[in-house]
Image 1 (cartoon, rainbow, N blue to C red):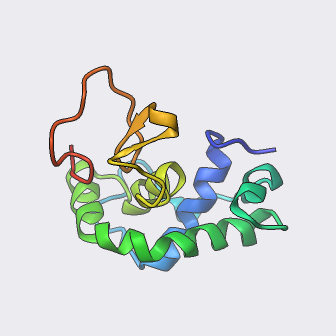
Image 2 (image 1 turned 90 degrees about the vertical axis):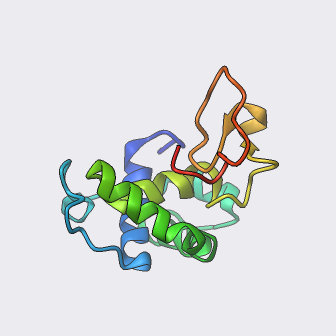
Length: 137
């Protein structure tokens, strides 16, 4: 079964978000392309807490679809960061989807029971600066 940190779940989420966001690859493919990766999709262990009674590719697509509305708020920012770091925006969006459901699970920027901060749930010993919750930093 795939866990939250399992790369296969992330890959499928990325593929779904790539299709849903319509993100171009332009100069963001320095590390490869999610479109060339085969994956089995979300495990049943991952899908069940999402309220899904099915697993695999359909579950990953559904999870990505649910996050799309919230993710669209960050589309320009995600593209900007992807181009700056030469990383596919779908990879960034996939991490954001998996870690915070595009911010929907955050409370004042914090998630994971107060152990992670921001859209990508970065762990930090130092408290975040104001306005960094949804920033490029």
